[in-house]
Image (cartoon, rainbow, N blue to C red; front, side, top):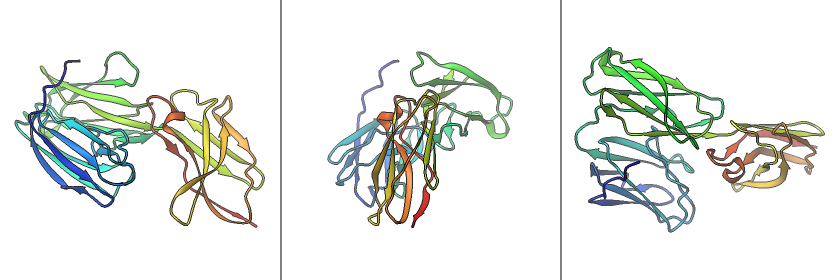
Length: 272
């Protein structure tokens, strides 16, 4: 695609263990925001509506994004969700908007994407396009009519990281992305445990880690499982007497391109 215009101003937001500082930053259309990690642990900047998501920002590293569409972008820390912030981008409003109700879903789950046209008229035709990770081009997925106040909406079920855009007349919205976690199922019986990972591709041969939640509120690895041909495995899980909170976890690297890391629900186990 065409290269973006160079940002004329870059404002810095410091990431600490307790806050984004400043929590609200205002920039003009075409300006940039730089998130600088001043903490000792990693952080991730994720827009609540899917407009942007940073990679993992390690300690003493930074990430910069240029904002070319006016609007208010609320965001949170993908690794520490209680940390929140807001970017206000001034300038003329976009002709057609798009946002996702949930920017990160588990494989098999749906989310709603919606927006509005600037005329605020009902009965306007908008076309919605998607581009799953790895595809060379966008594909039309829906032709919709706007409702009251020019609002449009639809439900999507992305099978891996997918970019969405909406067209109205000769205008195009900014792109948004919906990220996908593999679905991880984990059960523990008296003698055997089982794990199964579902995604848009086979997970056979990938590694899954069984983790225990410690009194220090950290997940630590206690067992490694290699998934079989059905993207699942049944195995013995040897535990000393006691109570455990366990989960199965697949890393970004093991999940593969187009997927985030994924974790099962937490399972409570009591061994006598």
